[in-house]
Image (cartoon, rainbow, N blue to C red; front, side, top):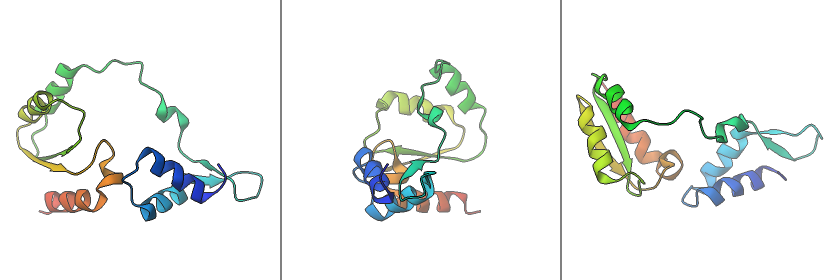
Amino acid sequence: MRDLAHAAERLRSRNPRMDPALAALLAWHGTVPCEDGGETRTWSFDRRHLLRSPTPFVEQGFRQALAAITAPTLVVWAEESWYAPEVRARRVAALAQAQVITLPGGHMLPYESPVALGDALREHLAF
C-alpha cells in the first residue's frame, strides 16, 4: 500500500465506525515498511489468517466446550450481531456463570467500541 494513511483508510473502509485515530494507530502497528526504502508499507500479519478453516464448525461441540467452563464468564454481544437470538441464548445457557452485556457495533467490537469493551473487561476482571 502507499503509506500509513492509506493503510488506515483501508482499515476504516472495512470498519467504517472505527475512530480515525485508532485506525492510524492500528495501521502503524499492523504494517511494516517495504524493502524499497520509501514510505510504502505492507501488512505485517500472516495472510493465511484470512483463509477459512478446512475444519467445519460444530455448534453442539462448541456448546459442550462452553459447558466445561466453570469460571465467571463475560459474554459480550454486539448490537448488530449476526447470530440469531436463539443461538446466543443457547450459548449463554451452556455457561455455568455468564454475565451478558451488549455493546454498540458489529463483528469488530475492539474496533467499533474499544473504550466500552475495555471498561467492561476491566470491571469483569477486577477481583
